[in-house]
Image (cartoon, rainbow, N blue to C red):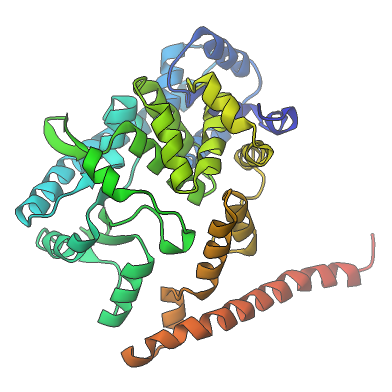
Length: 408
């Protein structure tokens, strides 16, 4: 489905990563990998990009299974060391998750761990095959304060230093609160939503809680979301970051492969309800076309009938191939986010909230007493306009210098 020009932009090193990030091995992609190994690959690039995209555990698994003499022993040895280090850290994080959930349970806080080790087990069936740096735990909004207090009793400290008024505003507009321990070596993110309010996309979290089920993960009984809910959560998270890391697509592909019982009609209905059909369509086109995920043909055709969806999938493929990705909170990022929403009201709401919702940066730039905190809603558009003007001046200066310089 993705246009040939988008696929042609992939260098051999990236194509090898795509082969390795597939949820299952088959003869076709094994043959393609062997063909790529015959070309002069830059193994420094392969390893660097695999780690940047978070797929180096998958790369090692795939290359080790190929047992090809063309793979440099030094490269395979480096990947093996990374793989073992990641496996050890993941087991430690799994043990830490048990402590976190136990402490939250003692505080009568229900929690759903939905990424990290739980996702590694649900999607890949192996803790070692996914790289993650922190633990993401979903709690009910009313339980956030108790969850933070409970984690502080385990030695975790909040990254943020906010006044009470700022904290209330932060919780109303954002979706997560990060706490660190051991000088940042351990991080837990308490989530009460999946994306910030400005994204104007609200999943039915009440349904997520109702359909969650208890499951044993490495001997630990945890509450996990349904496969449909988890897939939609992964899609929303990946779209928020414009799929900048291949690992986020690999997660989607692996989850689909691991759960053939997935109710696709329910998934499509949930996506339509929250205005996320185009987000889902982009993700499913990409994982089906680039990673060979077993997306039902009728679902793929239905989603690909939207020309905007296929065009966006091609754009993401170009980003994966190395094209510049819009930087966070830039106008380019806002335009891309707008294009991912199929409903006009969602685009307008997201634009309005992005322009008017104060952030920590706003509070830091103009410190105000608690009684005047709401003034930031008025100041923010002016600060954004000034920031944009400075950015334009900064980008224009080099071009003026180039024009003023004599030609060679």
